[in-house]
Image (cartoon, rainbow, N blue to C red; front, side, top):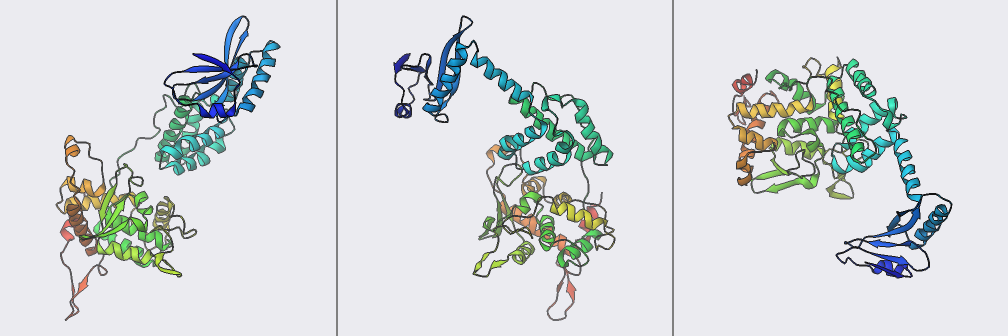
Length: 438
């Protein structure tokens, strides 16, 4: 279906979806008009003949391109046709040239803005990797010219620096980057195709032991002979008490805390959870004490915290501390001879989570409850039907774990008899700690 009339802006704005496609041609401008899609989308068209063949040239889309600009483009295209040129082919050649001239640096920037920020919570880590390991080396190269040899050279540099896991992570982000470019038509093939992980990874087995908890907790609790910011120290303590992921702890906001009839609960929103599932974490008294020590209040509004984040950046309260801060701070302290942590075998913040999981199993809690505490995704058929929240069981497990953890922090974790002043423990957990050795 087609029609002819003098096109106006008011007419274009009045077009509504009709359920079928039709065309309207602009009276007085041969070959120029609009095509209206079944959903009401409008595009400016130019029909012409070149080398004896009918050709269609899409000028642009309304309303991102206005009628006046579309007519100007039409007149330029009509002049080009009269001179023997084909505007459709020339545009295709221009786009091909632009595609082939895109640099790796430009591709990285586009990937972060158009894909990673929209689909990955870890986009900042991708951006950091690309800026540090890729752009300085091959950023000026044309994306189409990057070869497997170039990719392997980047990976080899990581391996030679003694960072095999980082090499694997770099390959992962490069594979995503170039695969995304292929999907968008920027490249015909990814240079990462066929490249295997440069390093074989083993599942980590590090679990903190009874003898390590005392110096660790004392240092984190007092800050003596340790150079970490207080906010970083307390973040590590809460990871060790709750078993939650580092990123989830660091993104905790005061509004996520809720007092219920059973006690205080931390509600992790779905957007903060690694698996995309919201999670409720019952909080032991020790966690609440740590959080209260972090609540810096606005002097003008005494009941309101100075920052919405429970773990604000020491340099900028409007942001939480960076996701890599605990890793770097812990690594530095374990290496520093003067640190009170020196002598403890190397471990990472994520090993705190493994320690909690192992401790709960040692305490006799079934794997299902450990899974619920850790917010691991349950892929079993039963999980589809079981809608129980397990809050009661999670609270019991985390309270018992807090007792076991603090019992290892003697003398800080002991109580004292009011009459005699003698120290006492609610439960001797030494046997349970011994069972955590494997």
